[in-house]
Length: 316
Image (cartoon, rainbow, N blue to C red):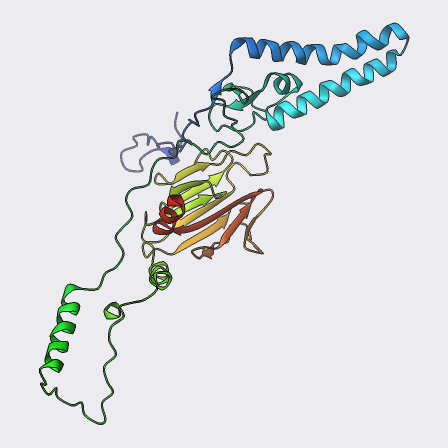
């Protein structure tokens, strides 16, 4: 029987509440090469042999205590390396790495959905550097240009001066009009780009740059972390950053972009904190994020920049 709070106060019909939509990060689709069954079996054989070998060598000599100690030490080191880096002794010998099928990061405590990637040999790719298969950005918006009528008016004025026409003299008390900024020609390219950056960035006109490698178009709400799994906002974009060192929180911080292009960053009570330049953010307190400011989170470096600037860097 549903409670009175879960029923309509007029007709008494039970109210079915929809569960909040869970935004799952897209599975990691980096083009790493899956390890063969032979490599996986070989790595397992080395992992089993490594802790047993001290016992086989030292036990006949009477050093049983030392053999047990070395056996336990090897087991603990292999377990720590597998969980934090995806590599045990056998994985190192055979050139493979265990990664999560969803995020491409180290398996951690979750051992479900594992994939063994080959990191050595022809065509191998280490998921430690997983920024591949990033969707191409759409064409950048054309920069602002001076209206065509400006050039025509300037040419007409030049002809009038050459023909000796007298132009009306301005009043002594009236200041000469200042030409608009768009009518000024010959500006350096850097100044034109600076003027474009200073203007508000509409949604999609900027990109989020992660570790100077991956570039993603900005959205109204972006959740950044090791494995952002849910949010009540249906429009939120979850960005899973591969983090083999596990220094990022699952949902580390969020970026919000207002309708006028202003962006803000909010730390979501992360373990290692979020820094903008040298300022540490207060948890759950938004801060305005300006274009070009560097964000440091869990050993990763991020920034927001105009899409035009990104295309220039990629073209070099």
